Length: 475
Image 1 (cartoon, rainbow, N blue to C red):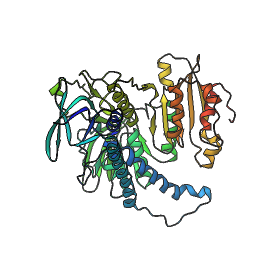
Image 2: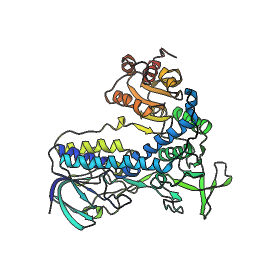
Image 3: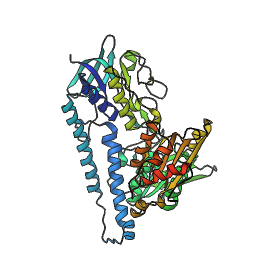
């Protein structure tokens, strides 16, 4: 029986980072992963690298380029004729990126001496050490671990009565491999995944209709950001989004998928689509984990119960990433993986959950970190707000990306930055400065006093910080 200091179950972003960090700290480490590619090959990286973050961003970039050359280059004096879409080549580019990234993790495992155990990991028994079963193509083996890190990730939530076959009715996996651009595309769910995938196929030529059960658009975002996004997506880009709907019957025929729903004013509607994407959130992968064998506590939502340091109720058993409380974000899971590995090694690992950024990779991008205005009002926190538009920024105008703004919320008494919210070009990159400001307890004055390169998109962050004190210089 192989014995390790640490066994990680799952090799998505949370799991593979935890394994690498544990190995760096001198711990004998193994990582169990059961993911297989469509051709039956074992692969590392989990949902994120194989059918999530990485391939979707590749398609978003490709579809943005297609839209730019068709509609946006004219303002630069660039005219293109005979533009054609080669969807197969676009999808192959996406797959090449996926293979490079997942192969890269295998290389990192080899470099850091992490043992990759191919198969399904399941807890068998505990005590002074933990026994974990690995069931793979070549049969089963049992390994022994002093400490276990559970990082089994999440899967798409499906709805009753809507059979996902990943051909005509798809979740995020099927929506990344359409063999042709559907003329009419339906999307259930106007969250991050729904908006991103809806944007991809709209740019490539689909007529997209998105149905959302919640009455508010992007409820997790700051209200001003959500309002701006709604205006851009619906009025300027032509995404058809209906809020507050109740799904009725969904009928599938050879010709189409017919969707009946009730609107917020109780009227009944029906529309037909060629393909349907179901993007209504994700659920943790805790099935067949062997929790019942060892008394591991899992709540009604399928989440593993942990403390602030991701410790479960069992000694030397930790859980991280999408299987525990908090947002299902790859970078949050990565930070938890580093924290847990360092704690196992006797160090003082930590994660600041108040400084976890959110990003939606639409065009324009949406990003935020910290509190929203609604949250601050609900908590009774006195604050000041500063806001500055990209329309006044020379670099944004040069890039033909004048939409959106950055807003900074700061404590009224101490001026400490409490939240930063952005919608605009490169918001995913710009938010890093805000994360650092919150992590180190910076004030809006600190950001305002830092010299930002000119011309750059980052100047909007500085101007928003100046606007907190009502002294923006360029607007």
